[in-house]
Length: 229
Length: 229
DNA sequence: TTTTAAAGATAGTCATACTATCATTAATAA
DNA sequence: TTATTAATGATAGTATGACTATCTTTAAAA
Image 1 (cartoon, rainbow over the protein chains, first blue to last red):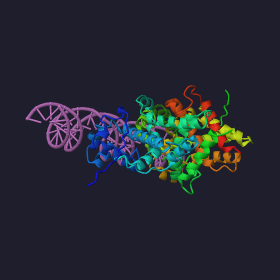
Image 2 (cartoon, rainbow over the protein chains, first blue to last red):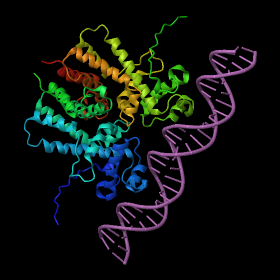
Image 3 (cartoon, protein in one colour):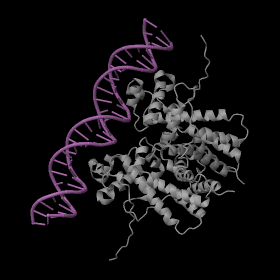
Image 4 (cartoon, helix red, strand yellow):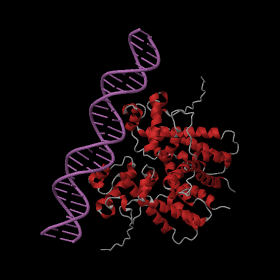
């Protein structure tokens, strides 16, 4: 018998997002796992707590003990993703001194389809990445955005934006729009992907449908404005 | 008594979007008018045909005679906006020979809060602009995007993208990503506005909250990559 | 062994997204 | 003018979604 050593990555989530911490119980982790699967498969609009409950083999009321409503659950898994991604970025750009290389690496990480991270048991990052692409902006494009923001629900996204903004400033301390450029990179990494696969004539990647082309576009866009005379 | 001359702007809409043409009847025009008001006020999620019917003074069934469901109605008014905007752009850049000036003008038009166009009676473009900002991407960020695309529902958006892409190519025939840059301009003109007003720390416009700053950012972004050595 | 927390089971409320039907009104054609 | 048809009004009804409430069972901790 072999003893397995496994470093489990735990992400600390905003307590206001849930009624009962889903990380702490089997049912809770099942809720996260199956909601990621269902939202990725059917889209957020068609996703209901009833279907989720059936999928898990529990009841609707059981889900409501963890999450107030499906919007909170969406914000939860999306916030989780941004936190995880920020960790990935800090990990993968560790020891990189050249900020230009760092920024390039970040763009690649943002625009590349993620593989499932085996350090997180119940979360399939590859599915989550697809959710971010098609549902990500629905987290904040609501009338409650102000309320949700007061609860700090968007902190992971803001933190990521801030990290990227700082790397941009390292590249060029005089650049005037580090945060707006950061959100542009994040949003466009995902929108161009969505367009490429669903409305290809809105992009220049219709033929190849290659993520690498999106990365080239973003690099060209970012480095022309950040690095110049 | 004075005879008023008024040029009424009529936009030809995709027939598949409606069951009965709303432009042709009083009730139809009321549906458009009031849905724009209600969606702008309460957001698309909270918008229902029942509320719309009550607002107009008709019944739910009455609305269903014009639109299959609220998503089609959303696509309708958004498609209308893109068509109207393309007309505005062609009008306002008419006789401008310098493509750089043309592109600058386009960026300004995209990022500036619209005033109500008195050539369109039942449509309040200023409200529509706010809808585009917070609900615009919900038109296509769905699982039915493929089906809707087959119906050509996104043609006005694509046409606008194509127009802007061509101006970009006029500026620099060698530029490799005219369409992706066009969608980036369009989406960012609206997302930066939304962020500025709702999640300001995601932008560099939090202090002033001025659209003019968004325009400066977009100009800087676009012209650095389009025009260079 | 007692207490408590979590989960299961079931029921019920209210709103939303529709569909169906029949009567009324207004415009148009014979 | 009347007959016909198109649009609307009025009303009802179904299925589903988004919850809330309550009661019982199970499992873990004190």
